[in-house]
Image: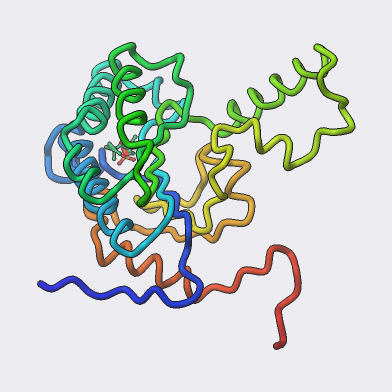
Length: 246
Ligand code: FPP
C-alpha cells in the first residue's frame, strides 16, 4: 500500500507527546506474555519515529517508563530496561543517522542501571549534532518529581543568596525543568483507551490539545498517527483567549 501523503499546511504541531499504552493487553488478548507486547510496542515506536520525521515534526516525546513503573514485577522491569537499552544501544543507529534524528532522554537518571545510563549518554553524544527530529524518551520519568526537583534547586539558590524569591516566575521555573529548551507539546496522544495524563509532562501539557485513541499501542500505525495529527489540525487553540472573529 502506498503511504498517504500528509499535507503540512498551516497548524501542524511542532511537538507531539505520546503515552504509549496497551502493550500488555495487546499480548494478553493473543494469549502471549506481556514481554511480547512491549517488543511489538518498541517496533511501533520505531515506525512512528520515522513517520514523525517524514512529516517534519520538530519534537516527538515518548513515555517509555514512568516513575511508577518501578512497582511492576522485577522481571517486567528488567525486560523493559533491556528493551530500552537495545533501542538506545545502536540497534537503530543507522536509522537515526539516515533520518538525522537527535535522541535525548528525560527522567530520573539516578534510578537507572549503570549500563542503561552509559547507553543513554553515548547515544545522546553521538546524535547531538543531528539537525532533524528530536526524539525525547521519558524513562523513569514523573511530572510531579520533575517540578519538585526544580523547586528544590530554586530554593537552594535562594538559600545560597544567589536568587531573590521575587525573581521566581514561570519562565525561570521552566529553565529548571528537564525539558528546558524544548518547546511545550502542542499535542498529546494517548493510546490504549484510558483518558488520563498519568503524571506525564504535567507542567508542559498546560495548553496541549489531547487526542485519545482506543487503539492498543502495538497496533498504532502510520494511518492512526496521521489521523491524530489531522484531528489536531482541525482544533482551534485559544490559550484562554476568546475566539477570533476575523
Ligand atoms: C504501557 O503499556 C507501556 C509501557 C509501560 C512501556 C512503553 C514501552 C514501549 C512501547 C517499548 C519501548 C519504547 C521505546 C521508545 C523503544 P502497559 O504495559 O501498561 O499496557 P497495559 O495497560 O495493556 O497493561
